[in-house]
Image 1 (cartoon, rainbow, N blue to C red):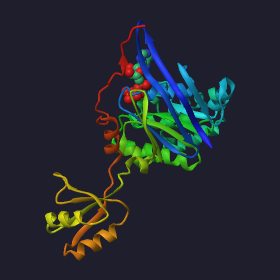
Image 2 (image 1 turned 90 degrees about the vertical axis):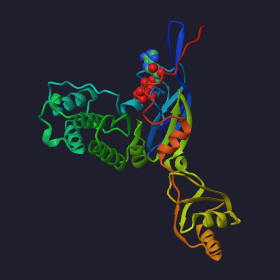
Image 3 (image 1 turned 90 degrees about the horizontal axis):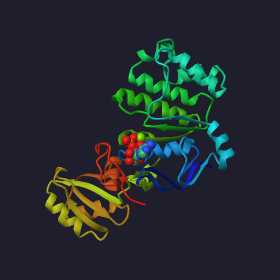
Image 4 (image 1 turned 60 degrees about the horizontal axis):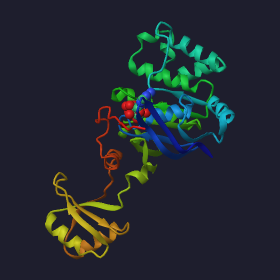
Length: 320
Ligand SMILES: Nc1ncnc2c1ncn2[C@@H]1O[C@H](COP(=O)(O)OP(=O)(O)OP(=O)(O)O)[C@@H](O)[C@H]1O
Ligand SMILES: [Mg+2]
């Protein structure tokens, strides 16, 4: 069943005679139970898309469907069953984490028991009475996650949940997200943290300049075909023999990959390749399937090093 669907979703910001195509006609689908990573360089339209999903922004064109509901009343009802955080959550600095969550519960009409459950989930039970202002950044981010689960939402939408955290803080957020998914909730999160997304998400979409450029399972996105990295005492002899293997499409070496010889096959038949090579007196000491990282796939798709584009503007001046 579908948790989120957008059709031709578009948001153009206008100021004077210029307009920014922040979200420029994106169509995607998130099925229930998925952990869906929404990736894109700075300024690519992630926060704007989330604002449109949550009804904080009004689309210039296109449609949103949440939890199978659409239309003004349908979306209102679906958003009540959705938990979300935006980039910087609003908490009262002089109140404790617990008091802040009690206010959230009151606003959402959720029972007080939800507050205890939420504090427990994010590991803040023993710091519940400390003032929010005294929390570390990691604790603040975890409190924001706690606030999203109050009201027992089916769908959780997170904008950069681990932004600015150290590795330990990121791991804590990752574990909370996986726990939420285990409870049967659908998770949609935006992020630049590709290694995190690769460890956490089942599906991803990549946007650039407001347009969707890739969408699929993490495995589909990192898929490179049947490429194997091989090693032998004599790499030149290995490469030469591999080129004569009938199932070999391409054979190459890479300067920074030690003595590896890469072989792309037409099918998944590494054992046949190995047998063929040994028949030509080339004995392989190592043979592994070559898998690229999500970061490699992202850079190839966007032509952009992750998180290093430094607030690129998709703003486009145009008159009329
Ligand atoms: N209120 C606004 N008015 C005008 N332009 C805006 C507004 N909000 C965002 N933009 C522009 O829309 C584009 C998309 O911004 P958005 O914040 O959605 O990107 P993002 O992918 O969330 O970026 P980041 O990774 O930096 O959080 C950017 O060019 C941004 O400058
Ligand atoms: Mg953003």
